[in-house]
Length: 208
Image 1 (tube, rainbow, N blue to C red):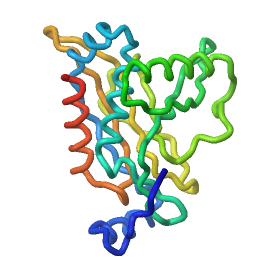
Image 2 (tube, one colour):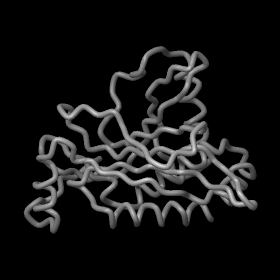
Image 3 (cartoon, rainbow, N blue to C red):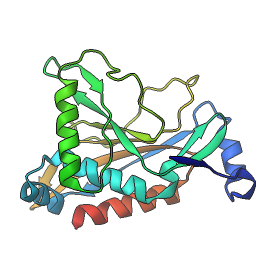
Image 4 (cartoon, rainbow, N blue to C red):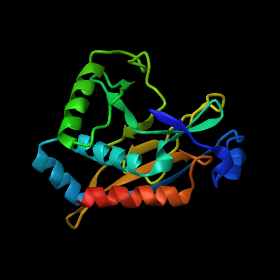
């Protein structure tokens, strides 16, 4: 479900109108997330670490309202819930776009992820479903690379307002495990302040 945001009463109306006319309205940051406790918690719950940090990412996306905004026909809509389209690697080293519905229960979500990963392995190509919807984030994991910056392939002619979140390689130093995270968002929908809220919320969940 979604509801239209009233632009006339939105305090970011001018910001939205300014940034949405740009050829590249997205901006992004790269930072580091402490995942020491999260890694141990995933082992305790017997879920994959990928599933665990994807779940916490979606929980944070759904908690910070601007991450649930999407632009549809030049209007801004607020979705009730956001899911994930994650890139899933196949044995032949190609990948497909998945669709994983968010569930607040991490164990239930892990079953959704497991089933979707198994389905992707039986497909070919990029798009493995007829429809994906607008209420999602584009998510990817690069566990081979401890990156310090990140960019995305984008078509400026294709209307897009979905946040793009990527994680890199987990490294450990002096018993502390960390991972790089890249976050790219539409500047017409949010600013650096909102990304800060998202990162803080995500780190709190990873520490819990």
